[in-house]
Length: 312
Image (tube, rainbow, N blue to C red; front, side, top):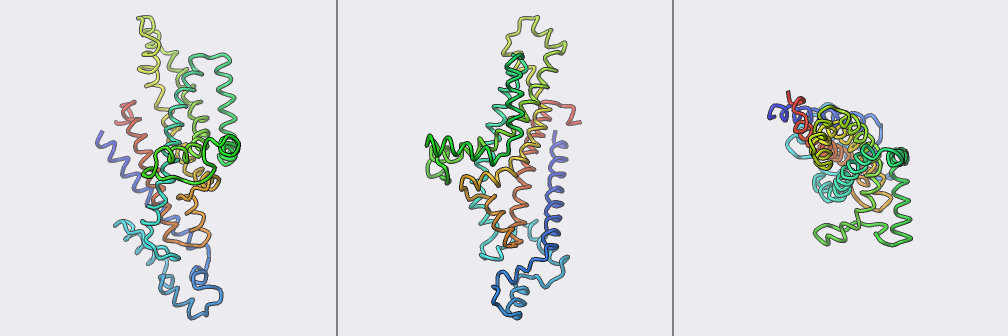
């Protein structure tokens, strides 16, 4: 198991370096004059050149890349070109918002995917058809549209949840829960649609196997048969789909945050990329890829626990 984890950690670190490097190259190919944007349109050429030298933009791209990657490896992501604040501090202030809706959305998606998928596989008939229809609709609808509908119904009309804003967990648990419920559900619906279909298909295959019929003939209770034996063997393919869906959740969080007025990482990406704040954009990319890698690592560990063959 240790070698399995080390391989996954190594591949995850390599992925972070590759994506961060590609992002650095792409940002230096935009041709955007960031020094001019910071100094102002009325600044003289001498002032722009001085600002460019201050930011290190007068250095070759390779030199700047090596300086940045060397500092990033040591945990220093630099400072924002526009505010002068450390990138880690800026991201740290916004990260709890995004992590809250991502992790709660992932948890909600996992729970309901299992419940819906198992129900469709076991009940069959109209339940199966209804679940498949709802899954197709949920998968087809974009997260921002779901977010707008949820906000219009449950925030504006029924006034059960707040329409905008975020309450910190340390300030009020109930306020925090209410502020992230609708965004998390808007993110989770797409993941539920895809993962529930996978759970359904895997459960149908597993329930047809000989060992299931043997256990049933021995009088094993239906609940124990489903959740202790069948679901464990049906879970690995669903975990693979769920890990892929988490990447979609990260992308959807950018839009959902805008809908509900949550100033998290998504809003930070919009503002920093439009202004050309390279250290902040790169810092956000590194942190978000790190989160994706960690979540997928947990998924791999769960997959390895459920299916020992993948550890070999």
